Length: 283
Ligand code: ADP
Ligand code: MG
Image 1 (cartoon, rainbow, N blue to C red):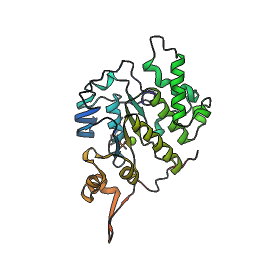
Image 2: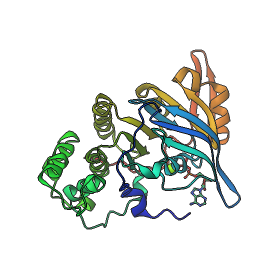
Image 3: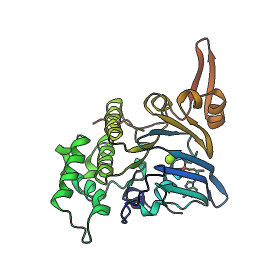
C-alpha cells in the first residue's frame, strides 16, 4: 500500500470512541504483514495495559513503522487482528500517530495552532467549526509542550524538536489514549529529547498509553516500562534485563550489532545507533 504523507500525519478517525474497559487498551493477535513477496511482520501477539510506556526497538527494516501503521488502522494487516479496547482501529479517535519526521510535508501552509486544532476534528460536531472550548484545549496542549509562544508560527519554520512537540500537542488536543510515536527522539539534541520525556511523564500522569519506536537502546532501557524487541517477529517483550540478553540482541541485530565481552559484562555496539549521519537540531 502507498502511505501518503497526509494520511500518516493527519490520521484522525471521525467516529466516536467505543471503549469497553473490560478489554486491554491494545491487543494484537497473530498479526502478519506482507508487501508482495516481502514479509514485514509475522506472528505478532501482545497486549498493552493502560498507562504503559513501551519502547519498540529493532534495526532498520525490522517492521516498526509497519507495526504502527497497522495499529493505527492506516494499513490493513495481511492476517491477524488488532483490538483497541475490544474494537477494530477504524472505530477510534483515541489513537494518535506521531509519524516519522521524514514522512512529514513541512511545506504544508498552516501555523502551529492550526496544526494542533487538526487534532480536534474527530471531536468536533457536524460542522467542524472550532468552538471556544476547542481553542482552549489547543491552548492547553501547546502550553503543556511549551510551545504557546510560537502558536502563530508557520509549521515549516520550526526546528525539528519544536515540530515534534507540535505534533505531540496535536495528539494531546485529540485527547488520545493510545499514542504511537515513530522515532520521535532521532536527530534531536539531548535537551530536546529531555523535553519529549517530560511530556511523556505528563502523559503518564494522564494514563495515556505510549508506544515509542527508537534506535536508542540506552534510553529504551532507562526510560520505558517495557521494551519490545522486533525484527519481523516479536523476539522479546519485557523489562530491559529480560530483553537485552546477548542471545536476543544478536538475533535482532545479527548483521548490525557487535557484542564485545569485557571484564564488566557484555558491551553492545549497534551500527544503527551511532554515526548514521543524523542531523542534530537545536531549539
Ligand atoms: P522500520 O520502521 O523498522 O525501519 P518498516 O516497517 O519501515 O521498518 O519496514 C519493514 C519492511 O517492510 C522493510 O523490509 C520495508 O522495506 C518493507 N516495507 C515497508 N513499507 C513498505 C511498502 N509500502 N511497500 C513495500 N515494502 C514495504
Ligand atoms: Mg521506521
